[in-house]
Length: 169
Image: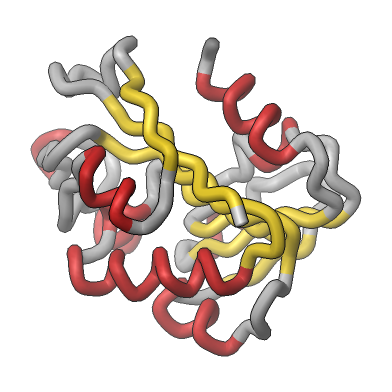
């Protein structure tokens, strides 16, 4: 199964989904839900979203704590959690779990994969949001209640691949 099919299947019964670190909304666009929320700290990504959704410009560390419990049916964080420190990631995962009525899905590299100015085409302010600051393991995500599958197709050249995890409520 390809990643977009996994994300679709995870949220097929959700009426509302919040995408944390949504960038241009690549996976959010594919979901059949009625209400879509795209959260990103880098405004040009939100400006590029062409499909209907509620755009939230801000840092997840600031925005998520202010949202009420069970705010949406589902929360997704695709290629996001590795961009914050481990400490911030633990806090953010707990907020995502608190915000979701039905489930939370994450996708991240398996372990730490360096992404900095030398490994990305991003520069300036965008680079600040694209630098990797942490790495996550199957065991760590399972500790939050996620059912985890290893993405064996590789992750942008990372030999350990990626991790797809879903936490059901």
